Image (tube, rainbow, N blue to C red; front, side, top):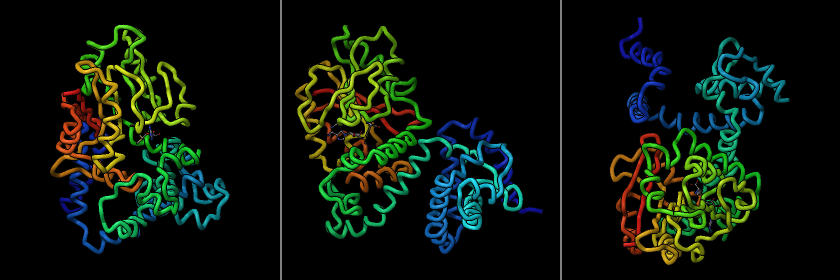
Length: 398
Ligand SMILES: C[S@@+](CC[C@H](N)C(=O)[O-])C[C@H]1O[C@@H](n2cnc3c(N)ncnc32)[C@H](O)[C@@H]1O
């Protein structure tokens, strides 16, 4: 007979797929937080250290190798018959004894499921890992980024433990012994790495709404109303908007009746590969004065978090201000807002990540308000969404 708590948790586990579908996103996250807290309360310190130092790095290594060996592809979707380590190793062209060791570790962590002696089948998670953007994200963080974390302590020693602020000379450059170049330059020069980075951004956006969707930023009320009356005018410029093609999706969502151009301003390699379906792409540099005057909205999505220095952010904002028409143009910022208290790990981990990659920093609401007010903006509103972790901040010239 199992003890009370064990059977209670097992009952909860049996209901998990139902709960996943039925709970609101906020409740689902609360439940996840509680299960993390339960683990923290139940495990002893030696177990916690063992898990952190042995299990988690080994688990990530096993996932990285399984991607390389085609394990997740070969296991297929949930419900497909299991495969033996001999079959999986044969498919990978690798030693069966080697592959079997990592399969065991994947199963020990629940990434795949052991169905019989030396036989494994996929889980919901491993079957998702067949998608290219998950593979790219997992390989990017392992191959291109893991080493950066190891070198943060020695990097911080080298700058006397100040808050990193130089985008071209941060932990990333220190770890790779490649000074004086931003991560973006490397992504441009190394196409494979650029593509893997893109996969990581896609992973970050997966399952989250677009900022113009219902329940988030009321774009029609705030920008379309009172906005462009002809297609010569500009509705929105996405500065450093990336390569995910969001503007093309926005154009379709707006439909043909909404007037105004959508413009992506980006680095040359992104402009070169942009499909420009429903939007225009032009080479842009936030370090230069904004060339397009009088747009309805100038957008910075995940740009200001690249800079921990408020002065660097002010320089970017001051390059936009002269192009804005007072009383008409708006500034849109889409970023994380770190709460003053009890920040969740999804936000704090991104803060650590932007520090490692770009010497950047996520900000609190108070920090954003004072940054924007310091260059003459007033904040008109902030909009969040229960299924997103970003917030849209709208500001105009005061
Ligand atoms: C952190 S990514 C954000 C991408 C996108 N806005 C998003 O939210 O997913 C920053 C983007 O800025 C672009 N970028 C880097 N330096 C730039 C510059 N000086 N001017 C304009 N874009 C730049 C990069 O190519 C990259 O796509």
